[in-house]
Length: 525
Image (tube, helix red, strand yellow):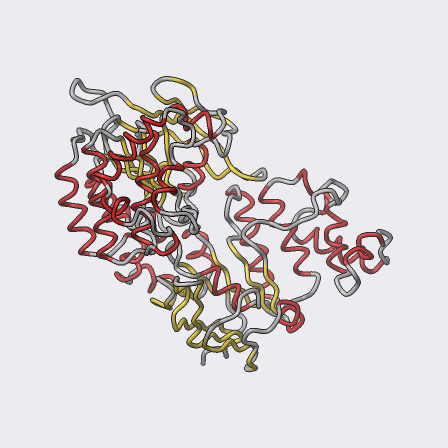
């Protein structure tokens, strides 16, 4: 007989403006289970977490806890009922000691300011706090400032602080993200021990090996809907789940295949053998060599080495949390590598500011839409040339991008906010080209677009390449992205795991294991 559901989600829908984040979503978390929640980027996982815990209001549907409706309750009421959560980015007091962070959690019934001032906690409170720190392996660091902890240690501290309230169910948002393998194992053991003591868990996590080894049941979201639910073995064997991660859009794939035929660059490498320079192969435009980088003391990228060939389309794919966006941020100067170097046309650019990287000839179209909605289309495009002082050159560039992107001239005087998501993406492409970059970086350009618009975007990417642009593409629709590309790279847990031609990477026998967890051999680049 199966255990009763402690948390039930039925027909939940949530939208942000015109974007449907959740659509009639269902979820069941059995009492005493360790349940996992996975899905591609933008599938609605964090939104569902926020709806359950009261940080977002659902438009329709119901959330039940222990059989009672709690839909759209406030976060404090949800917490008082026995539902605790952590966040993807840890929330600790860096200037307080490790012990004081846990003591603050023991005083949550008092005002925030008073709880901080009352440092001399009772003997029982201090004893309880030390027990929890010992449980998570941080007792020896009790007197250290929390700000000095590693990223993984901060995750453990957040777990200890959450346990102060003794919640019945713990919702963990990417507990293993950015954590080194040793601490990941330690975290998994603590979760298992708590589960044996009666705690229920719902875990959102991008580390598939962690999820599949830890969880009893796994639910998969895709485009805001529940796609599948079952044991880890059932989820791994479900073709629809793999399609959700790799991209199952036949129309988009067909367009990508046709677009690739127009590409000016032809690869000469294979996925299973080292890349060797040959006479017909152009030199790398961008070289990433042994890069290690991350946030808040946690390394996301681990010894990443990639060459981006001039004139080609290089597509980087990988499961959620693999480090793709972190890599792009490091290339563009938004994040400095802790080790390694990045060179563009032979010049060292790691450590340069974003403005300096832009001036070298590298432009990026970010994942999130970035137009100014109250400005006109043409004003947004002209903003791409804000560093140019030559008005004649700006006019020349504008005429050029209008020819390449007719929507700029057709909708020139309309507010950018009136455009559809796909139309906004094309305008962002146009703006990116106003500085005539040698390297165009595209971060998830097809995300959230319908199949027809995705096809237009992929065709546009190929057309930009035929005009002489080198393209570095991060794409969630791995099938379409890799078919379009001359070169493919798979990142997993911050490391390069497969590399070669786009087609060979896509057809590699270990691609499924990389996305859904499993044993994967190392591939030498």
